[in-house]
Length: 166
Image 1 (cartoon, rainbow, N blue to C red):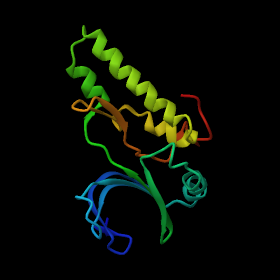
Image 2 (cartoon, rainbow, N blue to C red):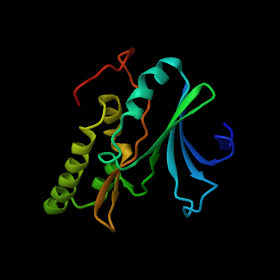
Image 3 (cartoon, rainbow, N blue to C red):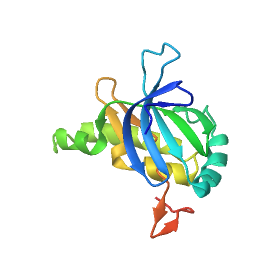
Image 4 (cartoon, helix red, strand yellow):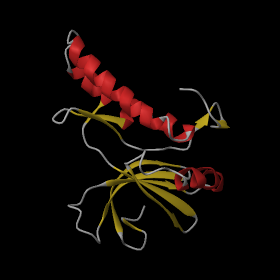
């Protein structure tokens, strides 16, 4: 993959996922001084994924999903851009804390529930992937639960994802 995309405006720091017709990358905007704050770029190249995801991303309410930055089109692809959050991945966090610290576990479970309620306003094909435990991170310092929107095209049981309760 090229280290620059969208005509050199964005630099790829890391390829998070690379599979047939889809890439998830950590990128920075090299044209503006945003202290090199990374963003997640979901790049869809398959025609069926472009047709499915373009209207979904186009109609995201930025007031409800504040991590959504924009959707862009490139040559034969679309790119959805979301803010990236650093922190401890959810499974690792719960392995670190004491099993007997019920109060702390309840606190972060409540914060996770609040984030899940935000996902309820999004299309199922986005929410389903965001509920992957590796996409959920904990900021211990600020005591927040955040979601990294790495939105892989869903193919469940060999069929395209059309909606599944999670």
